[in-house]
Structures are given as structure tokens and as C-alpha cells.
Length: 226
Image 1 (tube, rainbow, N blue to C red):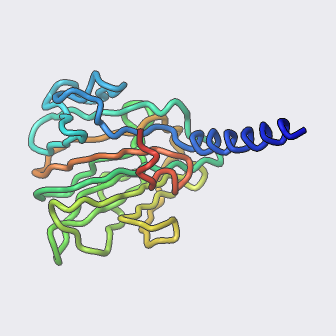
Image 2 (cartoon, rainbow, N blue to C red):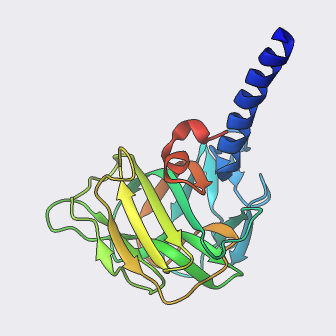
């Protein structure tokens, strides 16, 4: 009987671990990659302008170099499809340098051309820059109210809910009740990937500790990154 009790407790503990891990769709700290092009390592692929100013990985982080001309955009499939009743979250640490014009640089992706939960670099009159958010449009529908500073790492979380098409953004949150901004998109896209974009602006974003999850806390938690 004692052996049965011990095994039952261990089984419950293992079940809890497996349930927690099931909340994480994908995570990447970029530490195991060789310096150079991100595409071709760890399952990352280009969905636009492959090989034209490739996204770079170095020192356990990736760098998005915004600028003129066509530039590579990349994605990683998540091994699942967003559907009815689902809300997904993506999160990463990001530091920004330079600003010239508004541009989105991350999103969820369906196929190669449907983007949801777009995160933007946007101007701030009080400081260097701020973040913007859009459900599906090419310009931010809402902007983060606190001014942000170049070179400072921020932890962001972005959510996308299939049923309502609602998206939300948190910057350095403590939990899901922390301050956020929101928008409602135009489409119910069955997204399957996380994407990063390089476009016609003049700034860079250094990104680390990426997590995509089905719960807010798992996305937020850097310990989820492997």
C-alpha cells in the first residue's frame, strides 16, 4: 500500500509538469545557434525576401535590421493551429535602437501573408520611442502610454484571441492584470507560426527569450525558455 501511495504522488507530480509543458507551444533563447543567418537553424524559415539582408543571430539573441529595400522576414511553426476558443500569447525580451518611422516587427502568422497581433515601433514625444499594437491593420491602432528608452530591454507579451479577434499588449507586466492596451482585428485567422519582420525603417531590435504559449504566465516566464 505504501508503494502505491508513493507512486500515486509521483504520478500526480509528473502530470502537473506535463500539463505545464503542454501550455508552451514554442520557446527559443537562440543560445545553441552558430553566429550568422538565423534561417536554416532551429527550424526557422523565411516567408518573404529569403536571403535579402538575412535576420542575424549572435550571442544568444537575434537582430532585426530595419532599413530601405526588400529584407528577409522569418517565421517558426508552432506545431498547432489556433482555433475556436483559443487565445495564444507570444513574449520576448527586446531592446530598440534608433527610430525613423512606424513599422511592425513581430506577429502571429497564418500562411505567408496573414498577420495578427502586430507589434510596432512608434514615436513618443516624451522619450525615444514606444510600442504600438494592431489586430490586423498596417498601422498601430493603440500605442503604449509610457515613454520607452533606447537600449533598455523590455519584456513584452502579445495575445490574440481567435473568437473575438482581440489582441492585447503588455510591457514589463507582473501578471495578466497589469496594464495593457488592446485592439480588435478584422479576421479569425487560424495562425500556425510566430513571425519577425524587417521593413523600411531605420532602427534595430535585439530579441531574446522568445516564448509562445497558451497561457499568459507561461509566455511571460523566462524560465519557460529552453
